[in-house]
Length: 264
Image (cartoon, rainbow, N blue to C red; front, side, top):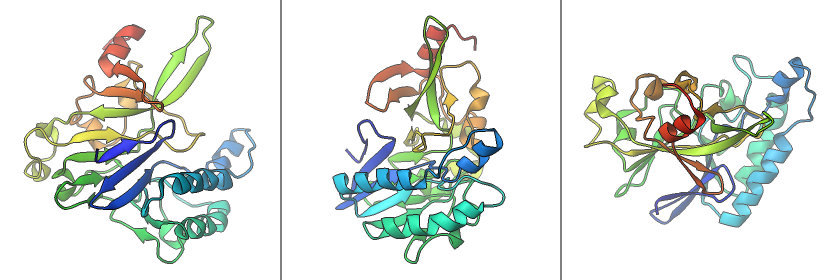
């Protein structure tokens, strides 16, 4: 298998051409500053995120650690906390694996926060492999054409989740993975030529952050899903398969919405 979600963790393991790549997305480091404005006071979550990543690196021994966007949170201006803590965050991880970032829409100024040797890629995505290819994008912008000429496309940005309610009305949100098919004719003309046949399978990653909200795909509001591919209808949303972090298959989005009693 080219790519496999890590059991119980919102991270992806890719083995391609003798390279091991660990992928995590949507860390939103520094989100505590926004929560303070809402009356929620938390200590910095950056040490905790770093410890989780170091544990994953020790377990899976990747050659490369690739962040699929939104490593940091605050836009348009980075906070003092991000400027103070992120350089050490990157430097510590870079001692264990080669660190790379595909910038997301929250990653403004990140070039000045990384330690020497950390690679910042084009925000329109990168391709891993030569014979069997995997494309990786954050998902807030249309990708480069080459990123679509692949076997598997991995994206983030949406923080996919499902919403559960118990008999007393208590609500919980669980982050999930989405396996989707694409609708090539819905892509811009300049990109359609790069897509072969029905196009690659799309894998949408859950957020690594434990504090960010999620787009509850079993609700009746598809507008919650962000990014040009979703907004243009280029993802066959109803057919998308939903998996929990432990690998449990919940069904398709259409089936989950029907079960919930949602109206389309």
